[in-house]
Length: 190
Ligand code: GRF
Image 1 (cartoon, rainbow, N blue to C red):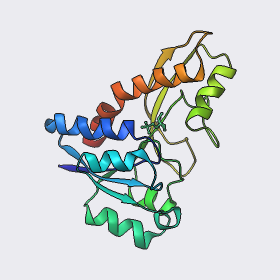
Image 2: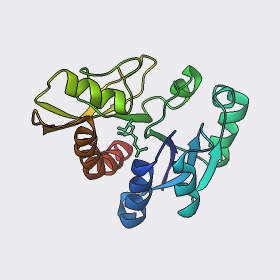
Image 3: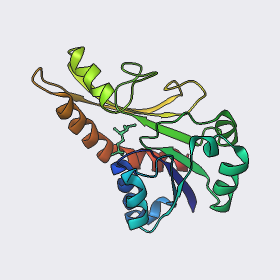
C-alpha cells in the first residue's frame, strides 16, 4: 500500500475527493494517510479530521525546516505527496527527497496562466480577461521552478464569452473532480 500525504492551504474539495476515491478504490493500492496545511483556518483541516485522516497544521517556517517536516512524513511512512491548492513553495530538500513523487494540480492549461501570483481566483479572472475560448487543468510533477515541472496530464473545457470567473472556476473544479484522483493513482503505480 502506497501512502499519500496531501498538502493544501484552502477549501480542500480536491483533498476530500482524493481521500474518498482511494477509500472506494482499494484496488489502487494507495491511501491518504496525512493532510498537511499551513493554514489553521483552512476548511481542508476540518475535512481531513471529519474523514478520520491525520491532520497537521504547520507554519511556513516549520514546512521549510527539515527537522520538522521530514520526521512528520517519516512517522506516517509517506511515499508520495499531492499538492491540492497548496499556496507555499515546496522546499528544495523535500523535492530532492521525494524526487518525481510530488505532484501538483494547476487550474489552467499550463504554460498559459501559470507562474507567480497565478493561483485560485486570480487564474480564472485572468482567463476571462484574456477572452480565452477554453481553459482546463494541468497535473504536473513538482520541480524547483514554479509550475514548470513535467506535465503528466491536461484536460480542457470550452468557455463561452458570457462565462464569469465563477463559471470558469466551476468548470475547472468539475474537471479536477473527474480526473485528479485517477491521475494520482496512475502516477503512483508507475
Ligand atoms: C484548485 O482549483 C486547484 O487546481 C488549485 O487550487 C484549487 C483548490 O481547490 N491549485 P480546493 O481547495 O481543492 O477546493
